Image 1 (cartoon, rainbow, N blue to C red):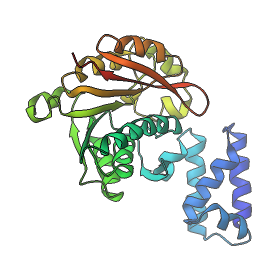
Image 2 (image 1 turned 60 degrees about the vertical axis):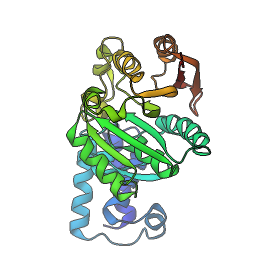
Image 3 (image 1 turned 180 degrees about the horizontal axis):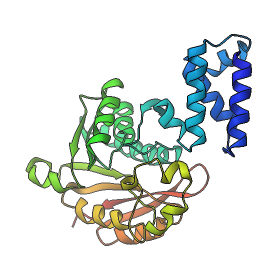
Image 4 (image 1 turned 180 degrees about the vertical axis):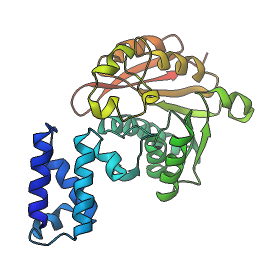
Length: 291
């Protein structure tokens, strides 16, 4: 089978299974299995696949038919121009979250003009995409990345090592701030706390796409009955770890910005909302009251 024939066959199979973007997914999987980019795939369409490679490709197509996300099949996802390893222990990094990282990076770089070290905490780090991106693009950033999942932390640590930020990102297994209370040197230490917490309403989880509800970690999705459980907990706990005037920044669901801003308004000031590239309210930020 040639590359062109393999791409056509994979596309047809995925299309018959009602996969949303069959040609895109078939192409991604084919490029992965031949370890080449799309340009090579299109310019070498008559190249023959080795039987073992063809077999592996069709196995991947079969996994995609079952609903498994392409990113879990290939084991990686691009985020902020960087390549992150992902697996079933971690959420798949999404472009929406880049709005959060870019907003915090802007603040961190402003602080870096007057400080050698900008201390940031990432709550619910997952693959480490937020923590590692902040450290990668802001060398003055020192990031403490927290997650309750040891599996996620193993993936995050690998990503940090591979991308050269392991000297500036520390990973801690903790249920939110729980373990940090035993580390007094971290009290009121951080210039910013950032989080993309679970925010799906419990009743809505069964309505999610099969790729999400059946394969991504449910603990990283379930935000409680109203989707706001973790925003309340993180906002309440953050005042013990932020410096006065420190930044708290959240990613939020498409209809949650006003509710999250209301949760923050008691202890934070100058709260504002940032839209993503689709014009959806995606980030809520505010600064801890100094008094």
